[in-house]
Image (cartoon, rainbow, N blue to C red; front, side, top):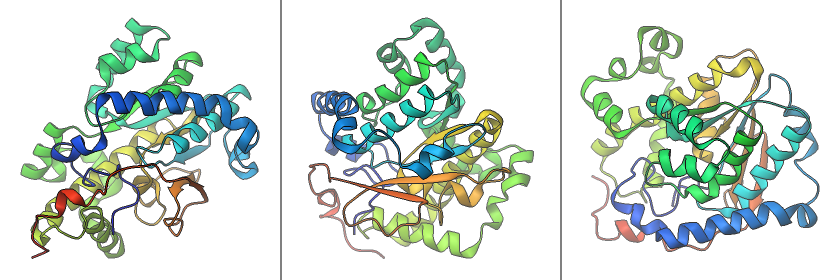
Length: 301
């Protein structure tokens, strides 16, 4: 089974070899153009905005986790339209992105100052490889137009290397370690993440590889939870893959704030059985078989 929440064609924790399967740069920009068109046109076809329960939550100090299937333009467009409606109604949350590295927030701030209200410029200066940035452009444009904080919550390759060598203390300070205690993660969380990693790699990974990837996944979720916590006083929105926002395994398991987050998953047909507060089913995006890259690998061992 292919993990339903990561970008198809890319292993759940990798951003290198199989990135090529996600399509050419031309294809990415074509999907971005489609997302922009959908933002403009979906209101007539799908209704005026977010479901009542979600719309009511998007105000004040609310913390809202908005998931995604990374290459699904329809889900991106719906999410951007919902946020646009909340902003028009007066909400001013921070936008926390999985796609930007937390360690490069200074670079992001400098680019924002140089780019003014040009989201394309911001992407060109700060967008790291492996993401379909045109699909995120509507969200970034909203952040610039409404002067919202843009916060990176991703972990870079260098930090992942430090994590592999030195464990959690190489990535998090003492206060963060005390707050989240990743070394004491509950057994059900660890088991569930292991299953998700295996499924995300078409059940082809050896056990030792899963063991190595598990701390990376936990660290990503902790990093996002902590970024949300720092910005929760005025409200915050997380933009991340569905696997990171799911209530049983993702960021909600690490949440330490006073206000419970509202969680929305944007899923493709056949993957609607994962726990979210609200599940939005969108048409599947056309793509090659993401397991093809693993076809020549031996089974688990």
